Structure formats: structure tokens, C-alpha cells
Length: 411
Image (cartoon, rainbow, N blue to C red; front, top):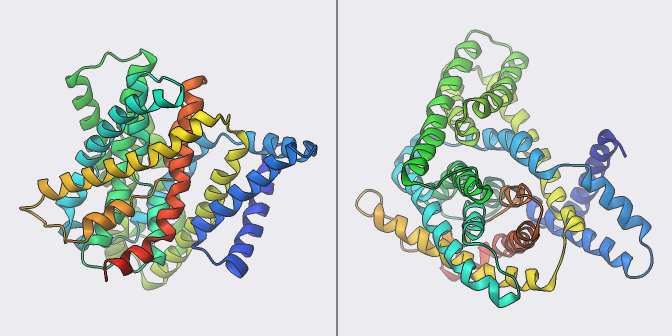
């Protein structure tokens, strides 16, 4: 099958599953689509055991044509981050800036350290050993919360709007930049292309993170200068698309964080750009356009995550290690959020229920899975993909049970 045929098939499957979820199953859109597509994948795998191997083979060939890691990290992510940042209220964001800043940087590092250390001692109980640096790789890729899953959760939940919602949303938009940079550092050490040192780590983090934010604000300002000089929503929407695609590509060439750059640009355009450079008609069309883009890419992405189960090299030891990693990841998440509450206690206090909500609302999704798929082929890759997939699947449980948690906390 050609690439166009595969993409057409993916769109058809996404449309059909979206209809089934909306009409009959009625789960939150992204979580429901991932769950249904996962069940479809498991059903196809089951056909192998009854002698109908032709259908699973065709499905594997189709799904295998799409490079999920490349698609997610270099194509889909930038558009979804911009769509999410576009609707963040900057004044509310700045009210929680210290908490969001610590959650998206220090907490990611704390979580990665706890998970990496715990995984190193945990995995041998399940019959395989992974080098310590690879365990920290796992900690880096699984620690960031997924903005796509988190923002979808916020749309369908009644999380109180007392700063908790903004902490969750702001953190999910920013911590991917820190997580990806941390992943690249450990990936270089794992590959032997980087000599580990404190100077290298700090320099890389500052260049990628701070450089990404400054660069993002700069390209957002440049785009705003063009946008405010025209009053035609077709052209202004086209400029927003050019800002995202061109800005993300140039960030990669400049070796600064593309995700952080696009979030910064989205915040600038979504607040200053909308208020000072757009008419009411343009704002309405821009919002509608990016809402449609967000929904379509979200749906297709989570269907693809579910279908990736067809390509996994499954071993019982990996599955059990994945199940054991779930409480480890939750424990690390709790400690990392708690540490953020301690560090920012004098600046912006966390409410009594926010630590639990932030812990349980820290969903993992396509970004973690894409980073795992980017690892070089071998036992480390096979093991970490399965373990990551198990944690991502458990995020469905977290998302679906958020209402019960809020009810238990009497919120």
C-alpha cells in the first residue's frame, strides 16, 4: 500500500470509530478512540490464533508504513501544541507562572530520576536487565504529561477553576520541551555520542529551553506584524499555519526546543495577536479552524496509538514489568508534584486537593510512545515500548476515573 492509501485508510477508520464512540460508547473522544482502536488491534491479533492471518498481516503492513515517531514529533505535535496554547488565558497563566515553571522543569527531572532509579532495580525481577542510562531514558520519556490527552481531559471534566486547571494545562504544554531535551541528553549518553557532564546538561537545557521560548516569542511577534496589517481571515489563518510549520522546522535547524517555541508563539498570538491584530470575524474563523485541526489530529493520533499494538514485540516479562511500572510512575508523579508545591509554597500555594488532582491528571500519551519508538532496535527498545504502552493505556483509566476522584474529594 502507498502512503496515500494508508492515510486514507487511517482517516476512514478514525471517522468510523469516532461515529461509534459518539453514538454508542460515549466516552471522551480521544480516550474512547484509543480504547476502541486498541480493542480492534487486539481483535486482529486474535485472528492469528484462529488461522485468519491474512487480515492481521495486511493491517500490520498498513500501520507499519507510517513512521509514528516521525509523524508525532515532527508533524502532528507542533499543530496540536499551537492549537492548545492559542486558547490559554495569559493573565491566568502568569498567575500560576511559578507553579507551572517548576512543574514543567524541576518536577520532570525529579520524576525522571525516581523512575529511572526504580526501574533499574525493578526490571531484573521480570527476567531482563536494562542499563542504568536506558532506565533514565525511560524516566525522561514517561515523565512529561501529554498535552493532547490532558487538554482533552480538561474539556470533559469538572476540575475546579481555582488555579488547578491552569496548572495542569500550562504544565502539559511546557513540560514536553523539558522532557524531550532530557530524553535527548540521555539518548546521546546511551548512544555513546555524548560525554556526560554537568556543564553539558545545563548548557543543553538552557539553550534548548530558554532559546526555544525566546525564539518562539520572536517568531510570534514577526507573525503578528504581518497579521495586524491585513483584515482577511483566509490570509491570517494561512499565516498562522506558516508560523507553526515554518517556525517548528527552523527551531530544529537552530537546535532550540520546537515544542517550547510553538507554545510561546501560540500564547503570543492567542493573547496579544488576537486582541490587537484581529477583527471579530477573523477571531471567530481562526478559533473554528484550529478547533477542527485539533479535533481531527487528536482523533487520528489516538487511533494510530491504539493500532500500534499490532506492531509490538510482546513478551510476558515486558507486560508484567509494565504493570509494575504503573505504580512507580504514579509514585514519582506524586513526589514530583509535592516537591513543586514545597518549592513554590511561598509564591503560589497549592490547594489541599490540587496535589492529588495533578497526580491523577498527569496523563501520558502519544509523545511518550513516540519517544520510545525513536530508540534504536534491540531488547531495550522492545522492552521500553511495551512498558511505555502499558503506562499510556493506564492513562485511559486515569482519565475516565477523574470524575470519581473529584466526587471522592467532594469537589
